[in-house]
Length: 103
Image (cartoon, rainbow, N blue to C red):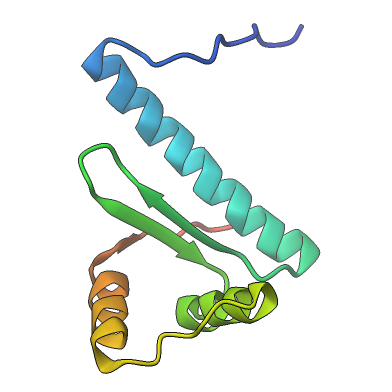
């Protein structure tokens, strides 16, 4: 027996919305870890909560992965000191969730 289909619309109840966000965020972080392990993929995931908190997962160095993405897309690298300072501040203040393969 499968799960019921969920209608994709905004959850109006703030408590239910927060619980759903937390559960789905954790599930997404776990899937990112599994993808990186099973397929030897380089994965970087950034999630911002409705309240503005940032969460991240990176199978390798986040700066390296973002630089690689920019190279692939032909986007400019952060060359000025202000951008680098802001990136360092951002990546230093995000919450990283450690996930073990058995979770």
